[in-house]
Image (cartoon, rainbow, N blue to C red; front, side, top):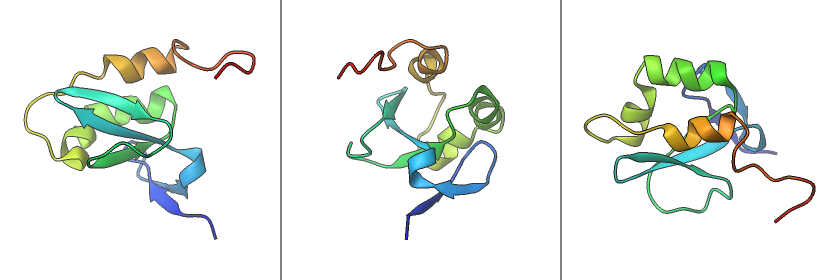
Length: 90
């Protein structure tokens, strides 16, 4: 049985393998591809719709239990294609 998590953007349940875990490091939202970084994490689909919904609803702030605004530039760059694996690279 696969672990199930809830997307903080669309609030639907999905297998853990279909979602991206993000963590807050200082005031930045960082993608945690291996889901091994320490600290509290939040799960989100890797789509613009879910990330935008999470930002509008301030779901990252609540799920990660941080005070103040978060910088989501890293996750937005990832959605736009920067930093993804290309042709079998490690």
